[in-house]
Image 1 (cartoon, rainbow, N blue to C red):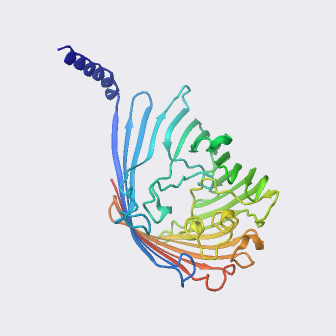
Image 2: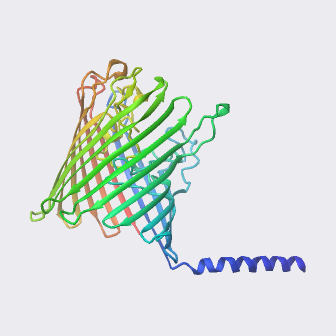
Image 3: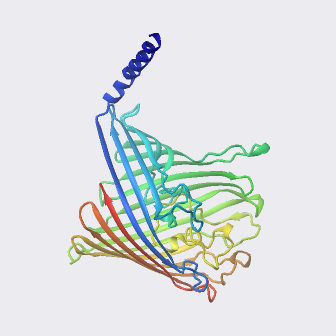
Length: 449
């Protein structure tokens, strides 16, 4: 009898402890989304003689649970499954992939408002981070299970982080710490093997011209490879935008990087001296039929031409960029290698370093439910790579051009369809036979509930 009495007492005690916690919940919201994509790609290596067309279906499912508690406390959780259809196998290896139906934790954070001081908000846990236009910090793209081919469409892009936000309108200050990668001490050497991100972002909103400005610092301390050494990057930047006249937005962003880079190329280490700047403008023709918009942008990322031993590294580090403007070039030699790619370890032939991008964008709304968007990009290298770095690439800087067209149809408030078509036209740096046009066609159906 005493055994059962003990069990009853334990259950009663558990109910007594848990009941107040459940009673504190003020509101719970469950939402989610389902997206299905049909992806057809041809000649992504830019060599039609060896490239194969890739056709696949990709599906992602997200479930969000948001709860408001008392005393300015709220929680958010997002669960995600993403996979290519019929993916009981890894890419090209039937039967090898057993995690295609796994459910990943994309978001799981607690928000504490008026923490200690009324304007202070603390956000702790796995969370999305986006600062400014996402040029420095905006996405931590991951595919935990290797279950999708098109990694740029991954649904898991959050950070394990602690963020403190001090909102003193018109001032706003964010302090950030994020653990990107936690590893063990490397062998008996005692070397650290972690990746950490620190940041400070201060913003100000002006009373006139819908103007805003911000200054920031983000530091990435990467000790993740005892073989390839360390990469400690400090990024300092300024960004601002305004509307000098109605419907016209102009802005600029500039950033500098310094730090230390040690790897197998230079065991003594290299000083990092890199830069990026972004100039942009957009105008909306509100009094014209179909409400067209026109935008122009010039993004410049510094590069390092020297693949041999050097005392200074000038290549821009992508950090955790979330702003991507094109369907193909932005991910070239990041996720998809070209046949003529340069020395892979240096990354100076990618779309995220050593590149100038001139982008012209536009859109029209022919009907209430249909939007047509277009992007034309012209790309050239900042630095003409030296012979040791070029690989099969020819001398010169002309990377190529890209044209993307996106048609979006809002079937209902909850359901939308999209059709993306993209063409990348290689420039003169690509050798003959490895300079064929790449194409991308992506059809999307998305439901939000």
